[in-house]
Length: 462
Image (cartoon, rainbow, N blue to C red; front, side, top):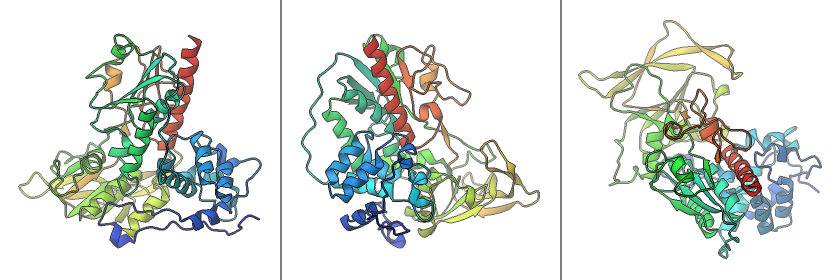
């Protein structure tokens, strides 16, 4: 009999006043007893609506049934058929707007904690000593993958399992893309990402770091003198956006990308770090997405008083509800329905002293379906701060586009590609944020998986 409890098993976590001073993982994961109890809530529906809500179509009821049977390795095997990064997705995927959104149990109560169960299974598997993966028989074809984020890693893994000789080219000195530079340690431990990359290396995938494609090498050189049969561009969207308001050039104004990269990748929060960050007394984070929450929570851990400024109401915050709640618990303040109009320096200084904001009200819906924020004349006010972090979204870096002949891009700088990842240039494929702009890890993985299938199909036909 299924467990008809109306609510999920809560996720154990560090106490807020403890975790906001360290970088250890906030969520502690289910115990075996919790996982068994939560798995028993699944009704194993015939029409499986949760599977349709998953961008990579994991057979969710099947892996949950394995948990009920206490076959945790069997559950991992089922997830791994469709997902290259189970431990990552179990932590950072927005399940509430994907698989769990369609869970039948969510009609009259809370949906099954699918993400929490995926994390439990992946962590169980990773806690056990695993035999080295055997390399598939080579098929004689070479594929270059640009970028080692979730899209590139997924594409590389899918192709390596089919016998392709795959080389990943990563611009930074460490592989992992946004998984290592963008998502804080307290949400996604880097040891998990390293383990996934090591698994790809066991399959024969080569990883070349400090390789800026478009500078070090071009796409045309990869296809030409380096002899690659195809190139997959999964370079993400790492170009930060700003508001273009007065004062953005003052000392103490950062993009969220810079702050997160220096903290997550360079360890700037540690004493004696090579790239230290000045510890601000008061920080304003502009934006309402997951990146804004990550930047705000990192600033809090650096000892700053933090306020998130967002031009819409809490109902319109694009960040995951869990991340918003965690931020609030950790002491981060929210100044909603207001927007910065100027960043002001101190007297005789070129450093930030305060931010002038204007209050907003919600008008008619815009193209996104959300009500458009409208300024309220005469409602300006100031918030004191010595640091401002802009978390307004990102766009694809134009470097690859500008150095590659025949590669079509859209007006936002994203590479134009079909649903299977084929670009306008022969033998060049693209997916993830490099195509769509900033999106989720699981959507990027889905794009990498689709492109790998198309590459295999096209090269096999040749």
